[in-house]
Each structure stands twice: as structure tokens, then as C-alpha cells.
Image (tube, rainbow, N blue to C red; front, side, top):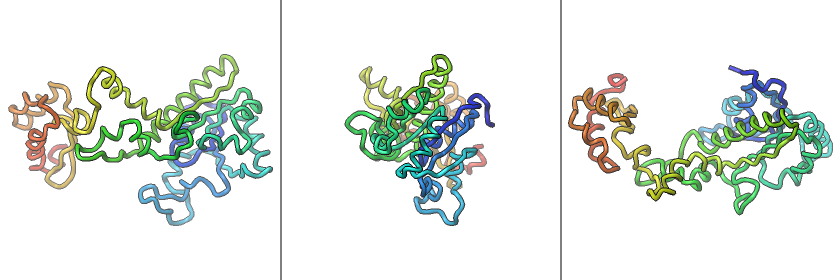
Length: 302
């Protein structure tokens, strides 16, 4: 359902692939008008199969592209040409929000750095979305979702004890999109009061770091880092994925004592109740519960 909270807000979207387009899609879903400005060759996501990484067959935009660009108006502008620069200048002057996902320095080289944009439109809310932010030693470093979740510690808490497993959906991409949409919305609220524009620096790595709040809090209190094999990362029998007889999977989330007790009694194993808080990873208990789930097909457990 499209809401009308941001009706009348004009957004320029210079981003490509997933994080930026998803952020502006959230704004569009709240009623904003989004104009997606793509280079002459288009957004690469238009022609990419994200499940295989290969070019998609045919000429139609891929479902992955359409999912994060629904309802947007798309234009192609060559920002390296004089005509393209003039056209984009006019768009900036009329916009409320600009979101771009270039590496730091690219907008300056194109002639649309932070100061120039503010001069063209003092009320503009300019959101720069990048891997490691506009400042710092990694500002120019390229990366993808897996790099950001690794550098912030999230990857080490996933998978199994032997090795981390890459997350899907791409958490840093979506986390940064949510942060960007939230910050832009907040800036619009402030601008309604004082008329001032804003510059917002959102990084994928720092957005993912914010999702590590529990782990950072525990570490600050002297706890060991949350690695794979702990309560919420595969080490507990009560919070686990089990294979069924027909080769499918069932999830168990019985963290609370009374849910665990009900589960154990329903399974005919009251002897498991007192073992909920055994040292992790609970290899032996997990094996016993796995054997029980593996005796029946998924339909039995639904």
C-alpha cells in the first residue's frame, strides 16, 4: 500500500543496484515522487540476474530491478556532458531530496559537490550513501555487502562454528537503505520548521555496525565476542534449524522457559527440560532433538 505521508516531496535518485534504490523506494512507498537519474547505459541491475550474477536474457528489466524501482520515473542523463550537467542542474534546483551512492569525490569531479549543490538549492536534503562513509581511512575503499558485515563483526556471528556463512538477504545493503530513508525523513521534518537543507552521510559499514549494538554492549561489559555457536547463532537446541524426514527443514524458537517446557513435553521428552541452558554449543542435545524431528516429514510438524 502506498501512503501519502510524503506526498509532494520530490526526490532525485542517482543511485544504482540495491541500497540507494531501496531507500528511495521506501520514500516512494510513502508518497514521494522519485525521479531516478541513470547514466546513458542504465542501472546495471536492469540487466543482471542477482541469483547467478550473469546478464539476464531478453530485453526487459529484471524483477530485481523492478522490485526496488516500482513507481519511479526513470531518465538517462550523461553527467559528464555539458548538456547533461545543465539538465541535472535544473533538476537539482527543483528537488527536495537528492540521494547518490558514488564513492567520495565523484560528485565533486562531476561538478556537483556538496557546496555546489547547497548553492544551487539551499533547502536540498543531500544524502550520500557509500561503503565506508565520506571520511576516514577506508572512504575510497570499494566493497560489497559481505565485506561490510565482516568488518563490523556480524559475519563472525553467523554460520557454524567451523566457518561463517554469508548472509542473505544482504543485511548491510538493507540496513543502510533503512538508515538513509529514516535520516532523510527526519531532515524533511526539520526543514518544515526552519527551511534548512541538510547533508547526510550514510555508510553501509556503519549502518551494519549499528545492528551490532547487543554484541558491542556485551563486549563493553567484558563478555566474549558473540561468535557462531552461541544462543542466537546456532549453538542452542531451543533456537535451531532441524532437518525433517523428507529432507526439508523446520525452525524451533523456544527461548523462553515455558515455551521450551511445552515443546519438550509435546515431543515426549520431559528429560530435555532441565537441559535448556547446557554449555553451548549444545551438540549432544541438538543431536537428540534432530533425531526426533528427523523421524517425521515437515507436514507432521506444521
